[in-house]
Length: 347
Image (cartoon, rainbow, N blue to C red):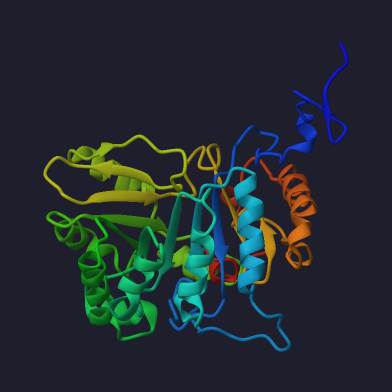
């Protein structure tokens, strides 16, 4: 019997697998469903653990990714299995087109969750607008519940404005807000008990992030580093229970307590096997792929974000670069990579 053909393609023909988009899987069988997308490296805070001297603009720097470039980048990642996008910076809400960026990411139906990491200074004014544009989740940094210590750490006297923003987020309809705090020995470590009391009757996941060493902060790290394992032991002894991790969750180990409405998340990059279940990649505001927060220089993507027809080579470059991802970072050996500070690629 003669085989029926349509446009010279046999009926029932199945294209070879290599003609389909590769999934974002590395050589250690880790799958990457989570993209952290920085949209600016500018920040208006001067946090002592990140940008103690404030943002220092570069001369003749390239512009940050524009909407069409972001759209093509998201399309490429989504076609390869990405389901969650976190918008970061710098301070991402400094961009005048921030709401349009949310809408651009939301336009891809394969992206199931859009999250934001922010210092919170614009939340009170704009959080309802962001929610309407499609923003699903918010992480806001609050390093102390003492306004004076907040000012000392961030360099800005905006504690009450940020706290008002959290209230406005709940009013806008968010069921939970995540609050980030870098807990540091000799500074805000005494706030630990106050944070626990704060979340007892509030649906807040309080995330304590272990201070991380970067190229410009060695002395600060030595003076103020507080091991997350100490907090973990204390919480477990007081009835907090470790929760299972969802496939697109970040690196936090989440604990809950039957007497608390809120939860605790611990981010401990120095803990054993921290990298074993890594599921996230990073793209900088200028279009470079970073395989690890503490890795080497980035892989250029921007030249493949200029035209819609470049999706295939973009995906090929993403897959090829991912095969070079290391099994783990080398923080335990004092090697924090080439990163001068965390704001440069969105933390």
